[in-house]
Length: 59
Image (tube, helix red, strand yellow):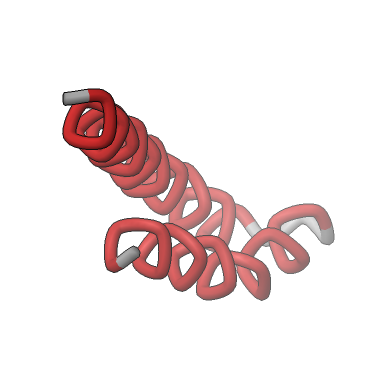
């Protein structure tokens, strides 16, 4: 599923900045917060797609 792959990629991309942010890097923290917003939106797309798949299978 394309939406899920995008979500995984966003999480993997944010991993390095998360490590930097926990080390005290304020700029990395800002990037992580931005990435979390993108991850939230991508997760919502996955939820939406799963509901569509479920509806199609139930019909």
